[in-house]
Image (cartoon, rainbow, N blue to C red; front, side):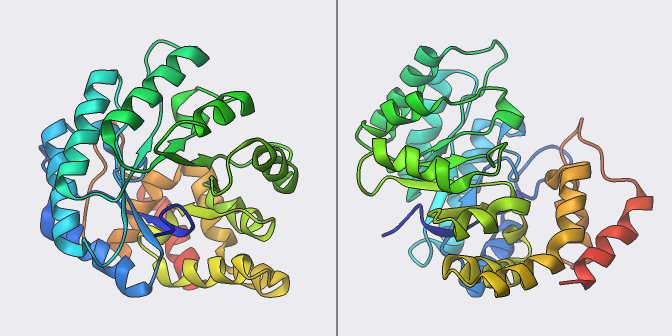
Length: 294
């Protein structure tokens, strides 16, 4: 199983006003992704609001996902938590429920040092006993993985991939070359940041961890396949249609925009967890226009 390659679609996690996971709507969203043919599902990533959910609700989400699509599509589960013991428990829950892989970001209130992050991830990777992807998400965690730290972690058993942010200088090829020269064969290097991920695939990246694919798996899959196949002209043509959506993601944050998309597509009137507020009504016409372009 090439768990950390291709298009990984990251789903919202529908909840009620008390933060309880709505299992039937979640299963419906995941089955849309499966039917479209994405390569994996990203469950309880940032798009899935993992940081806002209790351990019980996160376990409930994994169990619902496995019931809906388990065995028919790989499920990668986010197990980030403020404390290492909490992350260890979440990893155990995910494994027991039937997850195929883990995704781990170094959440923290106190800024972390490299050695702290290394020991945290190493402990979860060993105890989780599933293939694990390092979640390098400095926009949310405020922790920036050095290449040296990624290389060090890549030597450990069970750590099979890294989910990278878009490089500030846009040099995907250079970053990929440096990391591949220092990491084991088969270590997968993928990217998030939907507005730049097609360029990452064109440059030879292994995976696109996509927010938009959680609700728009068909259009995103076409773009991902074109980029993965090195079809530059077709990639540029398809990506041009996404530009209004990418602009909304950059301007308001993809998490907020996704809730509006779910409503406009008739998939459910879900609300983001407070203190996150729904987008202003004045923005909805722009989201509608972005969807029409696709």
